[in-house]
Image (cartoon, one colour):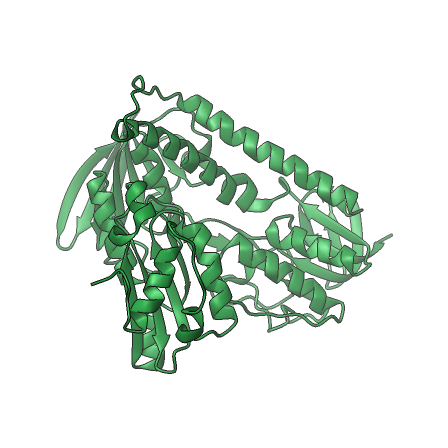
Length: 454
């Protein structure tokens, strides 16, 4: 006989567990179905493990710069096995903490794969559920390209590379998006010979063009080879190497590397038997309340498309659950986008190109970190801050590349969310010396009265 529950959440990632917690806050009996580990891709194979790798890489990189500050240290020695072990410890600790959190909130966790056996019933192993509401948060998985199928050894995806305990001497990264650029930062920091192949004409093609240009310049300084407007046309594996044919324009270039990382995006995972509407890319279709084409089924997170970011998934999961049980909620947000490269990138709102296309005339303020005292001290002053506003002074986009950009961009998100104007933002006092004050300098620049800019 089917078990009656108020809310069945399929998927225990950011959208799923956030929705589950919101369900309990609304007094509902909640069951979460998770076929793998709580936390989803973000906690187990994405945001958290990659940032652990990046932190280890940053520490290793910083040791080589101690002499700039008059500090002598022995030549650093890298134990990459310990880097991987540290990542595992971080992930295991956070997964355990999440499991404890949900248990304390009296949310039942069922391990297994959910499948719809009817429009109203979901089977999980030997248990049958008949929920009042269903929230689908099954996320995405790495895309597989024909001819570039991962074998887990010589050709790997972004999940598999996190588990490799040996460091290659050379690495080809297929895809110059966020994932590819972050892994390029990690492995180049450890002295790996890194090449990126990107199909479009620039790195991070969805970000502001000036951001992409600056990142490319900094990658070149670190001897990361970047081939844009290029694609992999052939690949042959032998016992220990991969021989790759790369097409750039009308010519073919041969390259031999130890490993190939395929990072060309992700595709949605939809539960078997899902009765709702799916678009032509495979994503679940929802309305502005996150309701699917079936009245009692809602969906949130990466499986519905859009920006595939954990912090957006949290908001969507909570909002979807609120709507599901008759509560009002916000359903659209200004979402910060963070890229944890070296230098870091933070952005929110429209790029300059998008703003011009949407509004025509725009005001643009720029400020180079070469004039920022804190960035100079950090010897990390190659970036800039950029603000785009419309003629009425309303801020439409903020873009940063430089130290702490992923932390500082949150403040800019508040500005956009509150529909602030440049003149009001200019009244906010920033502390000195900080990297953050470069934002205030950029606001002044947009208003035509820069203080420390020429």
